[in-house]
Structures are given as structure tokens and as C-alpha cells.
Length: 144
Image (cartoon, rainbow, N blue to C red; front, top):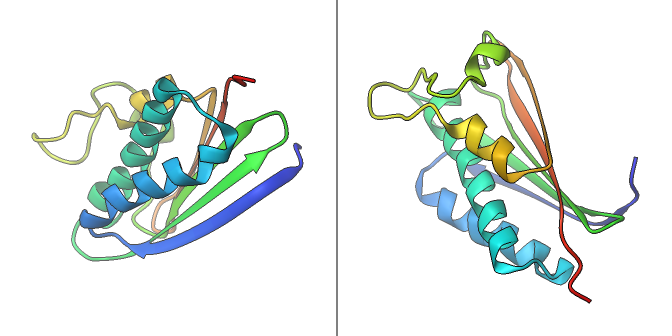
């Protein structure tokens, strides 16, 4: 396990208006790691997808808490953990398939696919009725 160089934890209600805030917070947190614009865009998109999943799927009928932990690890690795205590996922393998959604006709079913494509590693743990934790890692290119 890589040593933690810096860490921040944020807890906020599952309001869609908070999605933009957490995108900005993630970008600000990793700024000292000197990401390029593409990396920054990828990080913001992955965080946005993970938080949106919590809002839409974990708490579809009520507000709940979303917990985000951002960590800067040795080797210029950013770790992002997004956790909820919502409905959970019945079948993670099925949920990770492109185009699968439980969010209705207006959802694309591409959230996990997008997160995975922008990160170097992604792990999803979930238990029905207890919530879901998505942990993503991305090594940022050193420009120095």
C-alpha cells in the first residue's frame, strides 16, 4: 500500500447541486500533483459520474449522505473513494456492463464504463440495503 501524502474527506447531502462542488473540490485537491488539463478533465468526469450514481441510484426517493475521500499517494497517484449508504447494488458485474441502468429511460447506463475508462483502476463494493463504495486510482504524469 502506498503511503498517504495528503488526504481530505467530504460529506454532503445527495443533492444534484452538490455534484459541481465536488468536481471543483477534487480538482483543487489534486492541483499540487500538477495534473495536465486532460488528467484534470478525466478526474472531474470520474468524480461526477460516481457522485451522480449515488444521487440517482443510491437515494432515488430521498436525500442521503455521500462521503468522498481524496488521497494523494506516493508515486503521484490520486485515489478517489465515493461511498453512500443507500440501496446498494444487487449484481455488480451486471451493473458495470455498458448501457445497463436502473435509473430509467433518461439514463445512459455508462457511469461505471466512463469511470473505468478515465482511471487506472476501479473497485466497486456493494451490499443491497447497505450502500456502495467506489474506489478509483489514477497515476498523474509528472511534468517536471
